[in-house]
Image 1 (tube, rainbow, N blue to C red):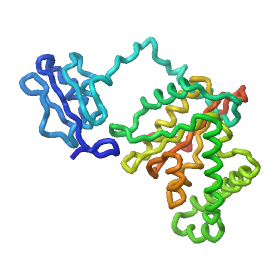
Image 2: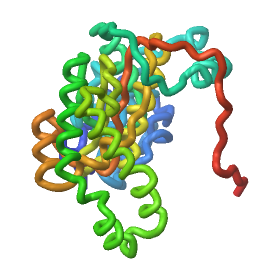
Image 3: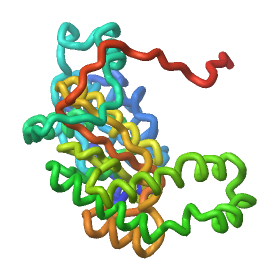
Length: 305
């Protein structure tokens, strides 16, 4: 049975040019759906496929003779491209230096982010591994200060009507159901967040998205692996960093707009098609501050299994 997404519920079609096939078996080796096999020194479509072709494109990307093309599931042979030469790839050191340079920036110059820069960020983010193809990650782009501010204040007004969600009586009722850690998180993080967002909105101060000139919201559909929007958002964040933009991931908005009639109404206003198990806002802008030092981070634990 083909793997369903919102974009397609059909399997892709495998097309084999037997005149070009040299029987090297590379396509068979990389196809983890077992859709291909070698018979009589030529590749053929097998009868042992697990799902039917999912459209990953591995087989046509590795074939040295161009003997295989895939169509369907939002994929076609026209989407193949030559990989960049090794000399143009980032070294480990240059990549880690980019990671080290990035800090969460919430102070931005009053300067819009150009469309060509936005397009570059999105093009980079599209290369992220986003689960079984075709990707079901959705992106909403707020490409101006005014759009970012409008959403931020709509969100604050929405929170005003949700104050019961962080009230003592509600948290007391919910503690036995969601446990100690969630109770501590709501009291120590979510409730203060409600307060600071709403109080500053009334002062015309945007502490939701800090009046960034650009924001992107990455979210999924009911079919999406929860990690997929987060991975894509991370690629976008690092692309923005490489282009000279300050950026910051914001985790406090997404969980609060997933459930209920009012949340649905807010999502619909901004073209957010689905509630999503995981999602992330990333803000961008030309930084108004410049850090001179980095701060070393650590994992909670690294244990060799």
